Length: 501
Image (cartoon, rainbow, N blue to C red; front, side):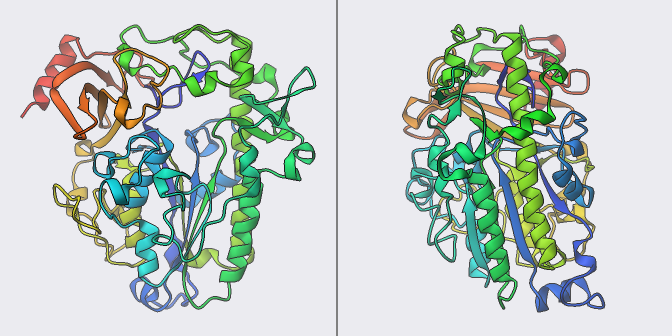
């Protein structure tokens, strides 16, 4: 579905995500401005601060959204390389994070849900923090970096990826509990959850605790002889929208506009529609008695959803600001690569994929970029399926991929999404592996998005492209919100014919 569009008050499947990386980072470093950048990397390895945000679409000032107050992220973007055409490989937390942290696609990690650990069920693939650790870095994890649980072996992939046990904020266990005070004065497990921080359990929130811990680690690393790789994972703006209530005041309800196209597109195949059953389980949404799967959300509640999403983004922005200010205060900024990414987005023309983050960070840090993966690559521990995007930084000796020098119109990004059936049902948004019957594969270029929904065998991890259940084709220049499916149109058939070998 169209990226960042609110339909019937619910966020649809979002393939588009983004990340940004600072420019000008190498002009001055702790090694001294007189040293050439490549030699500086050798003598004083650069640190890495990887900020991972949960379910953040491009609703930021730096992406042209004038309604959002995100001054800290915008400031970072102003001195960064900002990617506007970056795509996640699967718009679900665990598969997406494992994909970009290993540099492998979901069809390689064989993780489409939350219920398997890639090292056991697919291959003993190295991760980007593991690679930095093996090259002398102190690697640290704070908050939600890997998705917790089975998909990271209940350990956030320790001890492989991290130098010492990852930190999880103690208050995150309350995220989905009854801590939201409703109009009736009682506590509920709501979707919309502005809170008085002093009244919540422990008197704090997970992202505040993660920021505080990350700053403590930066203070320790200030005097370390070893470079560091610090990954900080923030929960917001993932649902529930649980944030300090003062941020709600930034967005008066009367100023909140509705989505530009809230209706389900007429040509959308049913398999592509996400009924968002996890949102429907929240108490305030249940009280609306919405029909399943397409039932419209009342207009006033749509505005409240958007208000709380925007407020959650601004709350997140303050945490990012505190973290970056600490980096400045500790005089670590000029020796640190900062990467900011959402798991599930330029001033750069080319399309890129989120799994390119791993080889790009390795290249920017002066490490040897892992080789391209063979096909198949289940037996190969260290390789990458993404591209090294070093060419965008106009720096030499980054080992960039030669084929990246071509026409940006030749760039392609791939995404996929599993479904249990051809029609929306209770587990459509998050089917377990055993229930996956259909897999949607998307090709995205700067001109169009083409998706084909095909039969899938979960026992063999095998897609059958001769068993086509449905298709989608959107020409993004003339239809930027992707409302008009041209798959069965004559123009669409002409394009699809040209894609055939």
